[in-house]
Image 1 (cartoon, one colour):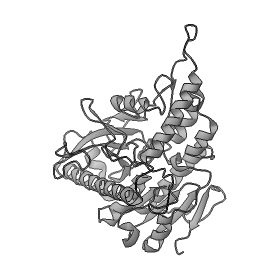
Image 2: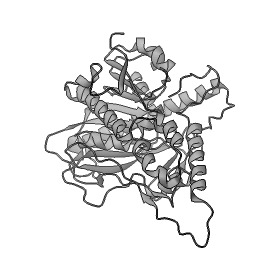
Image 3: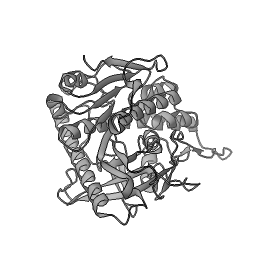
Image 4: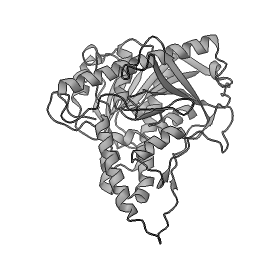
Length: 414
């Protein structure tokens, strides 16, 4: 989360791809140092297979991938593309466990590009599998399920927060994760075509007003992606879509839809509500706010959950304009990328790739990673249960002794 708005002077803005690449470069350098010179007598260790923490809910998880094409828009970032095209993935409670055949965390061609960038490099680590089975029948017992959308951070990808996404699906939610093409680091389309980052680079010498213009344009593109996703899903549920897994259409209740995201994805959730999309509640994980929400505010519930840094000006400025349920929380000991799968993955990878402890602290903070993820899962589940299922959420009412890491920065009536 940035503690500066564009125009406040020089700053490092962790939601930008520039910061992601800076971290990538550091990891790549650390990997090279740890590897040492190759010799005829050295045998490299086999890659370490990374794992994601198991979901905590009682339902097995299924997943289904969609290619979405919005023919009403040319691609805003690559003029040679006559239509806007992006990928979505649905995660849902399944009727049976997936067995050993689980969907990967990232599709193969996208994974090759991601690992070539230097983060979690191939040859040192193998990327994890999800806990979901591809196209499993949905669990129809229990009726229709609320829907939650997920938007990734700038330069990230649709499964950046899969540890949170799968957990929500295991508790009975239908979760839809989006890849915002050319804003994401890489997106793989059917057939193996990969589209990589294509937005203007946010370089350190970029004038603040130009940076703001680019980010706000990206926000508009993302909101339009969300709108098209909801339109497509509504049509699929209403008219039937033979490609959907058995039972998924029956359990998808779009009348109860919420959204969350990390970094610029969190800003996307807030702005989507501000623009009138049928999203009942939103959660922002450490994302500075941009767009109309800064001045127009919201009349729908918003959870602001930030890293252990000074309160961001955009959150402070927007707080008085939030006219519905609202919470402003800080996760002590966390950092900007604590709210992604780097929390479980980097500590596993660090010894193998030679990443120093100070790098992990800079990316995911000092809070014990399993504890960090457990607290995030508990807060998000309580938030969505409250606003989509009408259940009580004591964990969101005020400080608790069993959650000392959660700091209530502002009360609902402040």
